[in-house]
Length: 422
Ligand SMILES: [Zn+2]
Image (cartoon, rainbow, N blue to C red; front, side, top):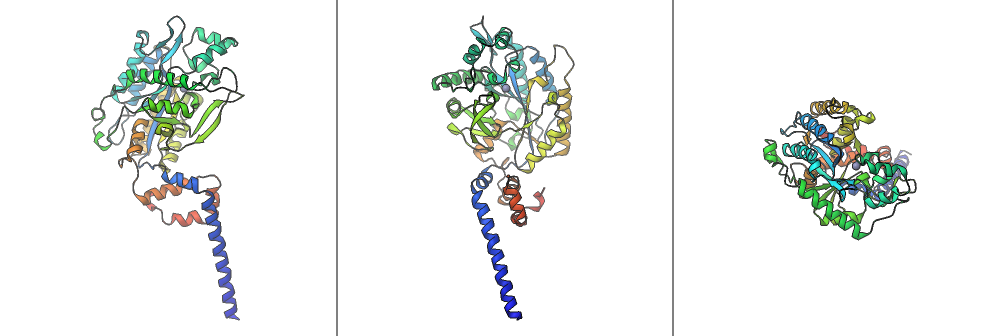
């Protein structure tokens, strides 16, 4: 009898084992594309904190003072290599001015205080300008909307803060005069991109000091500080715009992790046509980076939230790009520094304390590190990459839960680097 029971037990055991293997194989096959994409996503070695501040540039001259205060604040904090904190500035190159051939740009004399403030920070390595757009809207769309909307007509009369425009009209790379929005013609896209990239290059490329002059340990990361980075206004753009950027020398595009190509019938960003991870390539071989965390003190965001985003991203081998806007830092001329500036001080102090190997960098440098596979930044050790990959796949919706319940993740974790285990 014992003999028969033993055979029966063995059959049962093999059946369970076979069922488990079939389940796990099915799970891996069903999610293979996403598992592979996460494997190929570069894993950054150190915690990286980049605060990305949008909408600076042509506009109120009070920006000059706000930028100078920001530069002083950033220069108080240095990472483990001695490099100062660097904030990216997404730059708007012009604002409309009917009496001055349609627009006044950052190159015009009246905007000189703003341009000088940006360049001074750039030379110190605390600002990294990135192209946001010639204007934070499509001029023809705005003119069309102004013919029927009083709100837009009024704005055009004193057009300094594009933040005050209706949200859908702030998109540049789709015509949202009427909703749902319509794509621009290819010729219009190419001409507009060529004009704005040309002006951006003439104002900012080659202005930054060599990094060896900014911080002592620059040799640890041979960088390309002049790489062109674009932040699409309102994160609405399409592949034709991407190709036009690439043709003009743009190498990195900041994304929210997906590409939205229109404004829908309600004016919301829509028509998503792809998703992306850090290091994925777009049209013209541009490199995507993902910015999906926020630090907007005017909206009540606390340094604690930014720090937990940094912790979350670091565990997954990703840089932490925090989105913010100039509206947090603008004050009346001669006014007291904003509360956001104090929050920024708090954030950098605690980030450097909580993450002793924290690195400051720019998206241009990260793009370059990804392109060249720079071992100073990108993890090369297979077991470290495997450990980080396990953490990433555990966050995949549905897959993570099933992989835990089936015991697959706990099993794979036995092969992870224990010193890297969160
Ligand atoms: Zn913007």
